[in-house]
Image 1: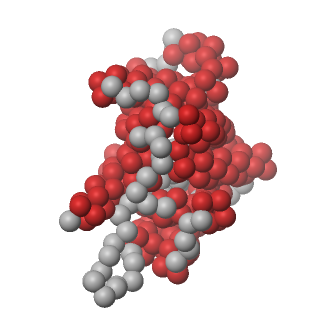
Image 2: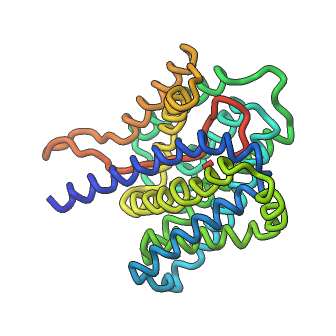
Length: 317
């Protein structure tokens, strides 16, 4: 019974992460028009670190144990810091479809790195699900790609973002063996904020002229898609493999399409809807396990990442 409850809680945490990460791509639309990539990343991380710091004080969470710091530092530099800035920059150089195609290499890299460095299993259902989801991500990306909208620099930046995302996830997993999800997220966010401090001048200057809606969206990105969603991600990751968590990232493109439709009135085309459906179907397959003598067992958790947005954007996550 306790095992089943843990699975349900982890699945719920993963769902929260996926939904909030998807909502980030809608909120970034406003913030990205007023803030440059580095300033937006720093403002988002500072907002997230403040919210997490208050929560840590309320829960009386101390410093992470020494053995967790290496993973926290690496994930903070790669995922919270470098990833956010590089992806923001990359998506200003290429259209959203091209960015989606390149960045969605991330879950595949997580699976390969997880198998190599963490000893994660690669069951056939996980591989099949990732193949279906990747096909869906390619379909969504192609349906949104603008002719002539790509640049070599943009593609390279998005590829670097995918590599940083994968490296950050794989580094974070061992840290969760000795530190709590809240500790790992809080101090990873702080490390990322420190990495982005060179953009402090830009943030102050741009905040003085940015509309209130853009600043509100930047704060929202810090409190919810960063502070809350990265914490629920860490909670779920601690209870499953990095490979399965990465696979569920493919649910985000489908949710972004739906949210953009509802919130922005951007009606997706048939090809986009087909791609979104494939993404969700692949996630369902990757989360499943074969029946055993004891009956069906479902793998709980899995969660997000940078994904396509219906237009050019400035952010991932």
